[in-house]
Length: 236
Image (cartoon, rainbow, N blue to C red; front, side):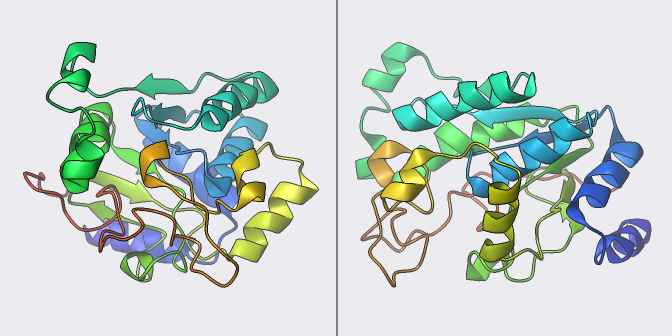
């Protein structure tokens, strides 16, 4: 564990591209990247693809994404010549229309658990590390995130190459490198999740104000607030 702390400290001032390369060097082929196709996720796809890093890339397809998100998914694959694996909930289409129908209205925490958290837990089995696109300035829960550390929720090392970046840093990189992003960002959706639980924000609002609007909920459980039934293994 101390080795991981030391390694993370050494990465703190490194550029994101170097962090990714060093993470790939240390963990490949047992390292993966889960993207939700936000601006930061598209940026990391660009960095991974440009350097042809041996990092697996997948997304959690909840079945409730915006049409624009699905279109962006295909556009990124075509642009970079990569495959972004689809990871989906384990319940059947019939269960989606019976047991889990409109679950986001009745119990959004449970909806996120069955559509996001549990699929992610299954998807990272067999990997030693996963890359995420979180930044410290996104939410209070993420303010103390490290470049790398042990993720007790999912039982592997979590690598956050963009953790020290600002939103301006991200926008500048995307513009300079012409990275494809979701057109919904230009329509008042700075943070995009599932369609039923994402609304536009007004000028001056927090960028994540449109997620689960009207509820105390601020995280889906992937990067904060351990969900019900979560378990973990011990760190290496």
